[in-house]
Image 1: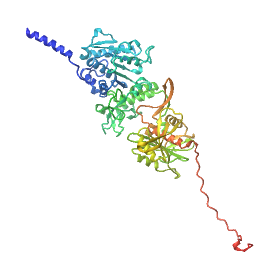
Image 2 (image 1 turned 180 degrees about the horizontal axis):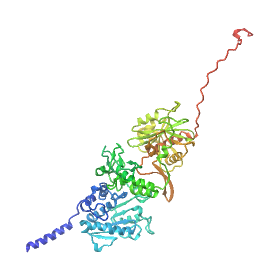
Image 3 (image 1 turned 60 degrees about the horizontal axis):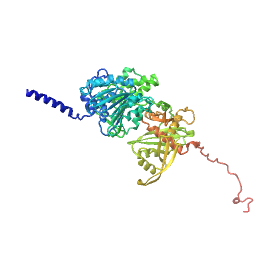
Image 4 (image 1 turned 90 degrees about the vertical axis):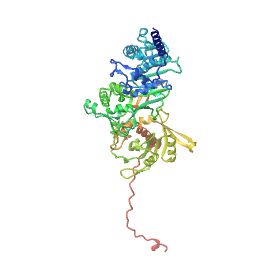
Length: 607
């Protein structure tokens, strides 16, 4: 009997200690791997959760437990596990750090459906969550747990958004939220106010597939303190890179099923063929980095993925979807851009394509100066480890021809390219009259270079906002480098992009055309047409601005051509006229000597 009493006492003490025991010190991904169970109704792979299946989600989930991070922005496509990422964070809070939670969906109907079919089944499938769930005290839109509640609201319901305080705020598919909650303000703003009670330890997570560039999730991504992308190593050369759709190689003429099976991805560094079988190992070895290669998170950290990273999507699937969407029209193409590439759809006013550039072949070979050229100008776009350049020949009416473009790695190489002579077909020699060099990335080295080569090079800085004039000259000093009175031109990039777009539309026989040399490479054509002019709202009014077609489009050659066009304007090409070389003077004809009498010969002279 005493033994039995002692046993009860021991059981009671064990239970009491279990209640007092602090929660395990786990990250969200570790908690999910240990406790999360996926439902067969809502998951393609039911059973125990494994972050190794979608390794890119580990960094996003674990940022939620990073004390530095207050807000997570996840710009996502479909089919990468984005919603489950949010659900794992919610499960972690219930199990590890009970505090008031608000979860917001686009409308109350979706909130009700998600609660019944995803959130409550998630709780009941996991013993770590079910043991804390007070089902009898809960409603579909207000779940009760030990020491906390979860309010589930629709973005269109101001009452639901302003009901209770919340330390944790989750907002799903924010681009589908209404602009206002009834007569109230923006739903996201109303929801954020619920976290004001927790000024020092609140956590906010918002995620969505994007719609427009002016939409909530894209705006949040652009304003995040750091934008992270998932870099994966090439299985052949080991170089890290992000996956972009333009590197997917496929033959559009093949049958769709063949495209699905034979398409591959081409490494941006070694051009090696990356197959679908390589993806799992690449994903496991990947890491989140910002554009400078740094991995540090900040208070508001943004994450971006496209569907190419998904273990459930083949490279060929993306190719087939693109081709079918393009054929179906804008509505389907927008769905591909938004839901597969996780990029915003543009309300396009002017859109160029690379085919139009390649059609503008002048018939001249690379390096040959076309007939009736007056001057040559150049543009240089400076990047971290390389410099892009273009050289353009200009004639009357600003008719222009690209005669050379390329990439170099050093400033001496730029000097070499700009200081050699270029010949026309009749042997006339031309040199670059003016080269405009971008100072946006490496200003000090650019200023040094332009000061050293002041007779033919000037530093410029592009402006994305409209300017009163096409360009403006300023003078700057760099006392620490002994440079004074450096010329720096501020250039209206939008104006010159309009100029290039307008000239590309001119017919071949029309004065003022914009041409490229024979057999121009496609990469140049793609970069020159990497941007489009779109309508955006600013301060309540519509404006038109140039934006990249996709977030990863290289536009270096377009910038070079903008700078070369500015350089031509700067030297006054608009007012120059071509002077036909005159015919060489004819040698004097031999004339018979007249039989004249001069004073030395006598005659009637005084001698």
